[in-house]
Image (cartoon, rainbow, N blue to C red):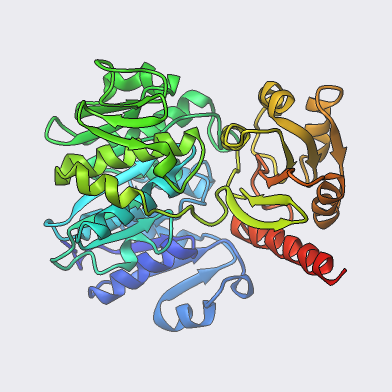
Length: 451
């Protein structure tokens, strides 16, 4: 229920902040908008300034006139202005929390978090629900922001949310009917004080759940296993390595099995790799917990296509296969890519540093990489980690790096962009990086076809 008497401030004018402000205005409230970027760097700033009271180029004392601050997930919570707000008792919430407070009570929420696999899993859940005939929306850290949808109106069966740790940091009453935790591996260590803090952030997904709700967790992730006692909800567990009675979904040779009766051969799936077999288990358990129709859910899962930038097949040029895995922004994602092919690959890596130890990839690279091509801001750090360990090329220019991998290849080789890093050294985001990679590959194909 929306309270028009609450005075809101929105910090950060990216996608979710703008969506929250527009929803507040739509429901009859008022919002003050604040961003540290100058006006000229904010998309749509002139229109925002016409519709709202705004400040650009910094967060001022004006903010303290407002009861509740909706803080963008991209804003570090150790900023002095945030510390002052805490001291003064200002309520700090995320856009996820705000949207949950105003949503109609008839819609059920399936929320997914984890270090890797979130986008594929929520998209698969949404795909299954739509195929089953439910009115479902997909929101959160994927696609449109949660509050951009007409969530305050009756008639939505399911809201499927991808949620990052940053979004979970400022929840209060948020309570998913089904919470899914896929895995926890080192990530965003430039934001959190420790890996333990990052883990605690992920477990906030379950903080408000009770035995009436469901938690779907992966038993192949040690931090999840070590902290599962914190979960009060009914547990549904899955694993690629364990079997009943320890889990409700498992891998029986090359078949996903859920209970004794329901089976899905992995060969029937269009998404490849063990990590996606695990994501499929998570999606099926989540859907079944609320719909109780596994036969239909399994059939729908068979038609799900891989997402863009997630081991996406790009082209076959002169017998050489190119795959775009630009969404692999940490080392654990690269482990998935290295394990998804039946032969060694040529892998292109590098980008902006998030504080990870790249040496953790050395054993898998030695086993599953024919050659590693590094570029971007982390190139020197990667070269230092893998020098004399794997065949290595350090190439400054991104396009030159892709072309070098092609030049080294012979028919049957596989070239994969799987960076293990964020993209902000050279690109707007991982999508921009992936699209640039595809454009380069298409240019190479065009050049080859002209010969």
